[in-house]
Length: 350
Image (cartoon, rainbow, N blue to C red; front, side, top):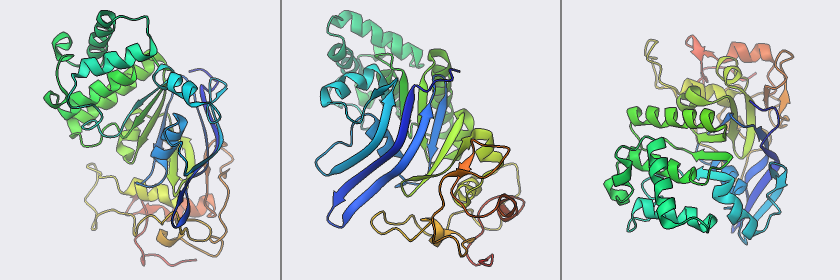
């Protein structure tokens, strides 16, 4: 894996003007992605994951949006790039697999024709016959059987899993360097999810893609990710390698996500694992740590929001936003013998 980042995001802030005030959907997010690496961005709905991804490829630009910070692709600044530059980079440099494969294609056009159109829009010297052959090869590469015939199918003739494979083929049509997969396994059954994840992993390794995987499912993350960013209320609350996040998580929100996983290798708990409450409104965030109203370990320092810092001397790349000491964290995150978040009222607030 190359040591130089292909995509570098620094202090990204994205806000939207609303009748209720400025909604800060993304607040100071920074990360790097290198060729051959899979970076997973996880969190509940509304945490800012998809807005971060869409801003990278210029889809959040509008009259009511405020975008600050830096997004560099191979050294080229994207935040200040004009629309023509972004249209060129989308597809050629950055491919995106959108969240809902069921509605991502035009239902009245054949699948192959839609991807041929995308190829020829960027590569005018490519003829229709050559582009169609390229689509057949793409369909074969993502595991769509009888590809030469299926390129002439309509979207409704594909199952959800096959449509997701076609979406991945479209994202890879122009051989991008960065692939963003936004909830690529949503609405798919478990067997098809495993196939899609295996496909993404293989494509990432074979092509040396810098891949961003956006999901709320830590089970998905465990399959393919190299590094993990945990987002809450528009900010990164913890980041580290896959092993650091899974085996030594430092933020109570991460504990809650971990504890919400169904474990088949352990006895069934006496209650369904969950995180109490709901994510806060981005128009009315609580003072200090935004997770504070849902956290059973809140104490006197929590109204002062800590920075994203390395708090473990042995893991300088593992950073989090929580005032608890590492010793307190290791003690408090144990719930019924595994990592999780205590239910409200089960612990005293210190």
